[in-house]
Length: 240
Image (cartoon, rainbow, N blue to C red; front, side):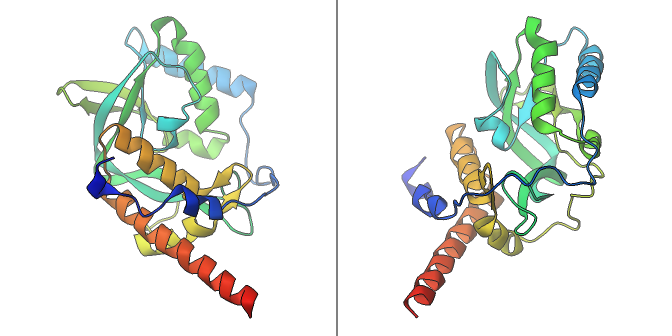
């Protein structure tokens, strides 16, 4: 990362956000997908793909923890969509008492991310792995779609995109301003880690591909400020 792009959100600040949390399990309103569902979905998506290569577009944690195997990757841009912390979570990196926010894609603007290519002979297997990682219940089914992305070389590639729009009850509308997102990310933590860690890892790994998302950069500054303020207040309270 360039010296003039030093992050305010550091690993030390992220570590302050961690706490042990038990897995509360899925909400009772969820309709979880079973093995047969995943097999059927993987068959449908693979059939729709046909002889074309399988590319998967990553804009958040898929960049640094994909959960499927790939043989190539490159930077790519999805036009007409942008990252937003609009997906409310009460599990993973949040709890029912302290819900968190995860990224999804909302309409408008552009999103610079990474596309991963899957080996031809592995398309069906890796497709199912990606589906299992990204979608755990029926509410998320409407958020998956094939979309055109453009590479730095100008080539347009059809890629599978997760959490782009959709009608899930977990999606917060209208979009939250960054100054409302920051306090949530500074506080939320679940059995898989904190939201601050999620933001930190995303910004760091985007930088490895030469990507600097303006909103995420501003957000990491706000979250860093929020974490510092929280722990100053905790320290003062402990002394008092």
